[in-house]
Image 1 (tube, helix red, strand yellow):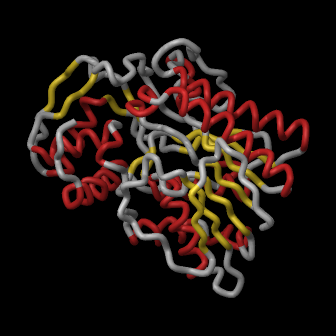
Image 2 (image 1 turned 30 degrees about the vertical axis):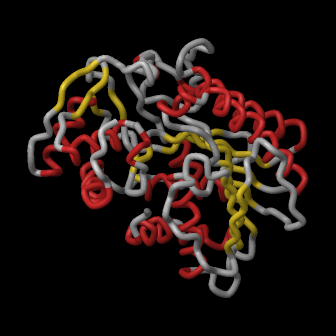
Image 3 (image 1 turned 180 degrees about the vertical axis):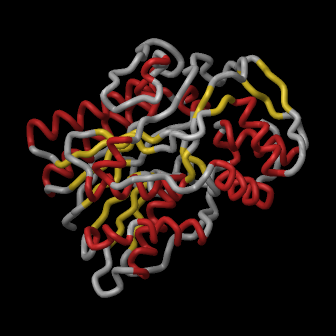
Length: 352
């Protein structure tokens, strides 16, 4: 679950754009996922914090396939409504929609390798359905793409700007995810050019925080689960591959700024460019945060995990800074401390 302190922090960070959501109806697709739950919580907090006299109404869609076991209760408020729905099927409503957040998708490499067709369907058919709804309602739509659309960039393009076209293969274990997000972006562009649909794109870079499922299988949940179990952490490959990590409160601020302020037809990197660290150095930082050594070893990629991962991944966020006023505030060590404090209380340590 999301930390109340994080919800308050993220809501406070968008006080200056709160009025953009006053009296509006927001449709949130994939609202029971990690990012979706935070978006939901922050918008509802915004109602209490700034929009009491004219709150926004939140309509949440989710098929509950990957989040169906969650024990999180749905909010009890007249300005919230949940509907179980798979967005690969058209969604109809008589309610006028002002904003659409298209977060629905399969983002974990473990799961998109296991469910490649479903990964393609939700990012392509699902996004097209939401764009058609946006075109009908004249809504602003925010499509959640991915930093994966850049593939494995040449070092001269790292940090990576939005103008970089990507070095991506359409064949391989990651292709179903990478290419589906690229096509989702193309759909946004086509709808904007053809119909004037106000579709904006965000490309998240390794967002993390409390609330990530233990069975997510990405690097930080994997590390936390192994630590909880008292087992050495598995680092895939050489351990020299580098990443940057963006704490959830900063990411949510960036996403909502893009929804309210982003230019239609444009894409924005949302992440924290500093520090760019190797996976072995990440273990050292986690050891420092926990105050004890974290045992680890290098292992080959398992068959269930795509081995063709990028060597480096780091965003250039100049565009988001200038056009959205986005600037990450939570240092990596502070974010890791919040995350691991939470996982120590909630993860079970079940080996994967």
